[in-house]
Length: 361
Ligand SMILES: C=CC1=C(C)c2cc3[nH]c(cc4nc(cc5[nH]c(cc1n2)c(C)c5CCC(=O)O)C(CCC(=O)O)=C4C)c(C)c3C=C
Ligand SMILES: [Fe+2]
Ligand SMILES: [Fe+2]
Image 1 (tube, helix red, strand yellow):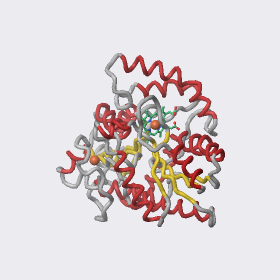
Image 2: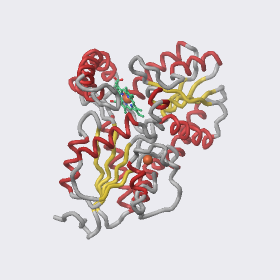
Image 3: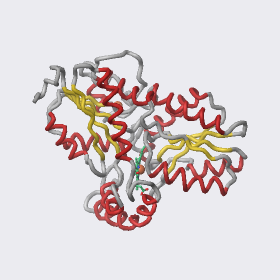
């Protein structure tokens, strides 16, 4: 057995930790998953014990409708997110192993609100004993509600070996942009010569996180959209935000409003899930079923949706490039501007001063 500092061929041990939100495994885990989500201070900013009490209330009230929605997917009453993320981990392992011959690369998955929980993965990584740890959120755009929440949970939980690097975000990474542009071009080709509008739909967040807290999410979403629209040569496109929860004002316009507008303007729609990298309830149910029904009612035809990037080679390669660049081991091609100090609390800022670390972010 090889210990820290020594892979099977004498190389170094590299742990890559993929972060995502997580999803319930089955109907029974919907309520505890929702409880974990609403108990997160990044999601509900109330002090304790009010936050936990409210999380209990919301998860109870939301359980039945959420279970009904999860049941609409072919995933045993739960979410396909973990299976999708495992496929991405496998593809990234292969891409990285080819780029870093001699090193031992292991890709771990750390979910924020359901198993494998970040706290569990932190123990697994520590037991494995890496020399280097690269933290890689599967959120292309940085948000306090997702990326920062995951990175903080990791920081609190990880007590193992290895120097850490953080890839905070990659809103304009070349492979992320080209994979989406390709999917859009193929959807538009399917629509033939009918007039079409591309609706870039991102998961929303409360507007005050952007205006009061300086959350860079909206700016980064707009950065992604500008690059993809240019790469795909689009003339009619708009940004909109889906999945609103609760009474606060969220970023707008909402995706349902954008669909209604398309109906009024007499154009068909290609919806592009621009902040998700894999399929789950927000794409398979919200976009493909709820909003498809709305589009039908409003006469938006055709209504098409591009698949998420999933394991598309340009996307996985761009992630692998981000990892190797963060280690200072390969490539000098620009990987995108990242948060660039826009989010002062981002760990990539502190790492920037330590040699190559954070170069990709
Ligand atoms: C870019 C990604 C995401 C952001 C930003 C985000 C913010 C955010 N989400 C909620 C509430 C819920 N999210 C839920 C599921 C869910 N959300 C994301 C991604 C982002 N969330 C993912 C990947 C998933 C998992 C989907 C799955 O298949 O399991 C849910 C549960 C589903 C539901 O009941 O609708 C809730 C609730 C808030 C409040 C928020 C920002 C404040
Ligand atoms: Fe969400
Ligand atoms: Fe950053």
